[in-house]
Structure formats: structure tokens, C-alpha cells
Amino acid sequence: MPTGPQILETSRAGEAAVRLRHQALNAPNIITLSRLVLSIVLFVLIDIGGWWRTAAAVFTVAACTDFVDGYIARKYGLVTVLGRILDPFVDKIIICGAFIFLQKWPASGVTAWITFLILAREMFITSLRTFLEQRGQDFSAKWSGKLKMILQCIAVPACLLSLSPEFNAWLTPWLSESAFLVLRDACLWLAVAITVYSGLEYTLRAARMLSMPPPEDAAT
Image (cartoon, rainbow, N blue to C red; front, side):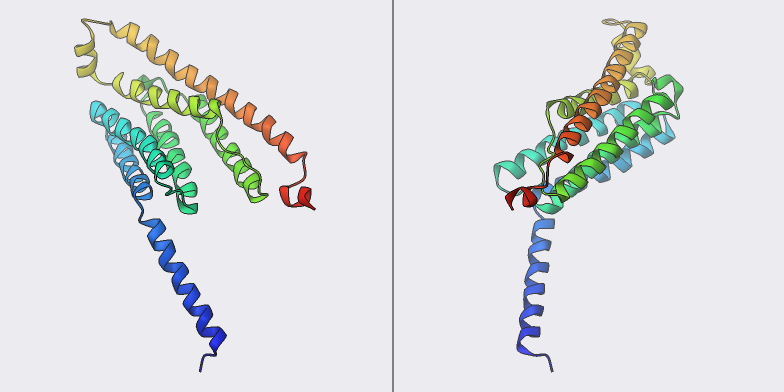
């Protein structure tokens, strides 16, 4: 028969599981999961081609949910460990996935080098953040990382819409197709430049943090 301490431990484990389920089902995390579903829809639309305006709309909605879930989590005190893990993971999935799938279409303006630079930056900085936060050091996003995300969220719909003959026909009275392509490429390469810059800035910041003892060591 289980002893008193074993029963107490089982009860605590059950309570912890219930709390985890409640955390997993809060509004910000549900919104984040909906963004993951939208990312799969987006990738299918890009892969089959022809649904460029729909793909741009799906991406825009998904990008907006990124701001919504963060706002709700902070405003109502719903920030959870699960959310801190899930939110950046889904962000990387939708951004990196969009560039990977757009490479299939050369007219999108996305090249292998663009995709490589974005993927390399995201993978490296995510690894640094994970390591530093395990040490108890704060490695939260700074202005360059937020600007990088905004520019990427502008560049991806621009690349998608540049593939749409219907959008180009609608735009022609106000802006020629060649002028729109120049703007698209400017947004795209500016996003790449800020992505690289933010990666370097975060790397230097991490190097300074790694030169210092972890908080628990400093306290002793």
C-alpha cells in the first residue's frame, strides 16, 4: 500500500498537471497555437501556387496574432513558461518557413542566400538565448530584434503579392509593376540587413554576458 508521503507526492503531481493544463489552455497560448495552424495553411498555399493574395492575407493575420497574444499575456498577467517557449518557436516557424517555401518561386525575389542568412541568425540567437536563460540571465528581445520582425513581416507579404497578376493589375494605375518590384526588393534586403545587424548585436551582448559569472555565482 502507498505510504503517506507517496500519497502526498502523487497528489502534488496531480495538482501540478492540472495547473499545467490550465496554463496550456489560456487565451494567449491558444492564439499562438492558431498561428501555428495558419503557418501550415500558408505553406500549403505557397507550395501549390496561384493563391498569392490569400497567402498574403493568411500571413498578415498570423503576424497580427503575434502582437495580440503578447499584449493579452502582459495585460492580464497570463505569461507562462509554456507561452515563453511556444511563442518564439511559432514565430521562427512561420518566418523561416515562408522564406523556405518562397524559394521555390524565383520571381518572388527570395534567394538561397536570403534564406540562409535568416535561418542562420534565428538558429544561432535562439541557441544563445536558451543557454543564457538557463544560466538565469535575461536575454529578452531588444529594439533591433523587434524591428527585424516588423521588416520581415512587411517583406513576406510584398514577395507574395509580387507573384499575383491580379494584384499587379490592380496596382498599376497607382504604381507600375517595376516600381513595386523595386520597393519589394528594398524591403526584402532591408529586412536581411537588419536581421544580420541584430544577430551581430545580440552576439556581442551575449559575449559580454558570458564574460560575467551567472547570477547565482555572483550572489555567493
